[in-house]
Image (cartoon, rainbow, N blue to C red; front, side, top):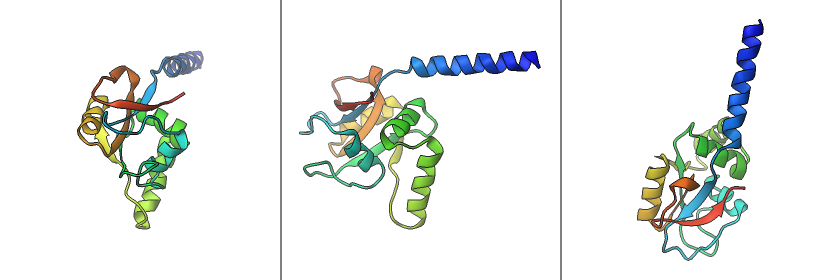
Length: 142
């Protein structure tokens, strides 16, 4: 029993330390976009299918990282205010009722960055450590 408790405690500490040291997440758009910043609410509305265009006009196509990635989980919890399972259930209900189509799962940081850099209508999010001049940051998660 002591071994089990020690293992649980070690696992909990390891999990907490990885959360504390998690890198910053940046919401990105095409570098030619006229948008300089977006609010958390604007971004949530796009990724929850409540808005189809950027504030001020222009079609917006949100792209997600792959399901289960740490960056996606942090984004969903912080911006969309949903756990991974809540986000999936939210979109399942909208799809089932014909009221929406979820954002495309684009891949990892590099894949999302490449898609956003190639399409002025796309918006995505990546680990801030993966940023370069091919995209523009419009929001950083606190």
